[in-house]
Length: 219
Image (cartoon, rainbow, N blue to C red; front, side):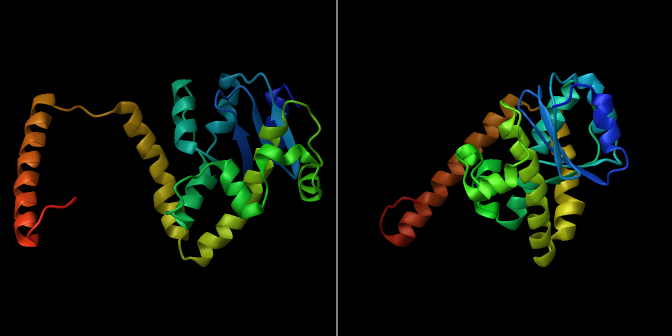
């Protein structure tokens, strides 16, 4: 566990990519660097600008859209969000329905993040370097994210989805986040008017369908 972000910056300096996991409140962030885990506690968001606004530090994590919005609300314009393991899993399997880190880790790596302290042989071999109490989950998550990236990237390349993921879906995260922040303006009266038009059209089409079928049924 480290408290000085300058110490963390020295570790990250020159690294091509860095895996990390941030708690929802961004009070603690775990980084996986050079096969070691570092937890930055008592996070000062301002002090993280040097990391998250540096586009040359390629970041591997999860839920980047939500994190982008949270950091932007703190005055940090994030750059270098390179690999979102949740989005990667969606590209690989769009029918999954749930893309939480816990589920992806269990299915891709056979690791249950909720139970990794059960001292199973496999889990102990993966998390043997996690010793600090109260930081186990975010520490394990950072390491799992790094391992997931390796597995998922191989699948994405094999499925010929590399351009789709890196050139379209990942850049779209920032666009969607900005859209969510800015919102859109609508004319309520016009929207209600159009809704009524669609409803009348739906009723007409339903009658035609029932007439052709000779009976009514749930469309």
